[in-house]
Image 1 (cartoon, rainbow, N blue to C red):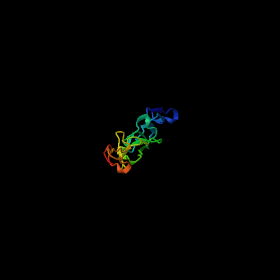
Image 2 (cartoon, one colour):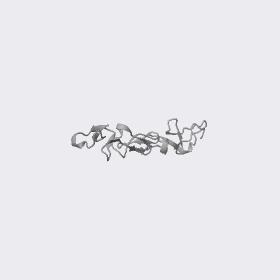
Image 3 (tube, rainbow, N blue to C red):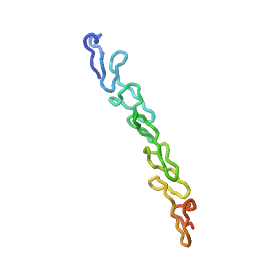
Image 4 (tube, rainbow, N blue to C red):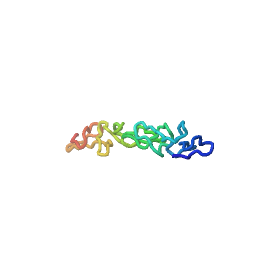
Length: 141
């Protein structure tokens, strides 16, 4: 897991003494190569060669509602929503996505989790619009 010490740097015959370590390992206080340990809040910690420094927060994937940022940490997703309430937490499945959980008056939630304006009909007059059209595809004059 590293480069063995030679010459005067090798202080013990057949000792596990290293001068440097492979990626994913670090020199411990006994000059041996030990596997790095990474941590990750809200995701899966890096291991092996992906854990490039010991005792560092480095993630390889994130829990639902989080994304991997440029520092390899898990950051909460942010969603947007026109004409309604944006998804938060695990409901915001993709960062910077337009995902709604509910809609303002006069709008309804589509299959794609967007808020669309309600459409009303009126056979003997003028169809309601905006907030007055309280239900999509309703007959409201």
